[in-house]
Length: 113
Length: 110
Image (cartoon, rainbow over all chains, first blue to last red; front, side, top):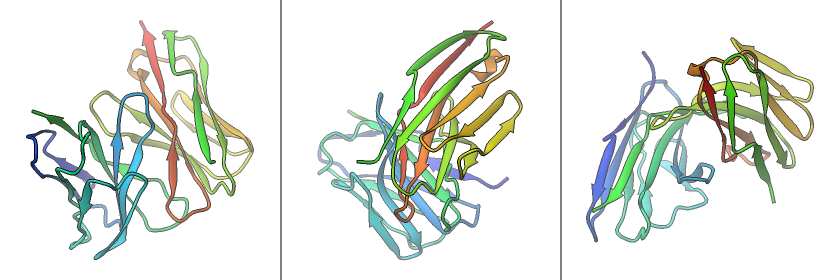
C-alpha cells in the first residue's frame, strides 16, 4: 500500500542535542511538507519541498533544518536552537499541482528529557 | 490576514443525532478547501476537496458543502466511530500555501 512513513513514533531530546525525524513516502509525490501541531493551534508549516534538492522555509523554520536528496525522503532535523521543540510533528506529501490535497503520515511526538 | 476559523471547538452528540461543523475563511483567491479527520495520536486523514461555491461532496455519513465564505461538514446519524477531530484547511492563491483551522473535536456517545 502507498503511504507516508514517519519514524520514530516517539522521540526524546536532551538539552543541546540535535535530533532527526524521518519521513519516507512511496506515493511518487513531488511535494513534501513538515508541520508542527501544538494543542489548540492549527498545523503550522515548518518547511516544504517542491522538488528534489530544493526546499523553502515555512512560517516557523527557525531552529529546524531539512534536506531533500531523494524524491521519497524528506528528513527534518530539530536543532538545539529550537528552544521549544516539544510538539507533534507531521510530514505530508502531495502531487505538485494547485488544489491537490496533502496526505499525512502518522506523526512523531518529540519531548524534552 | 488570511484566516480559517472552525466552530464549535468541541461537539458532543448522541448516536444518531445529526449536526454540522462549520469552517469559515477570510482569504483572497480561494483555490481549494480540504476537510480532514484526525484520530488521537495519528496524522490527518483526507476526506474531501471542494473547489467552488455550491459544490458538495459525500462519503458515507459525511457531506461537505461550500459557499463563498464558509464550508459545512454535515454528519448524518453519527456513530461512535465518527468520534475524531475534524480539520478544515484552505489553499489560497500562494503556491502550495495551505492554512489549517484548529479543528472541531467531535464525540459521539452510544
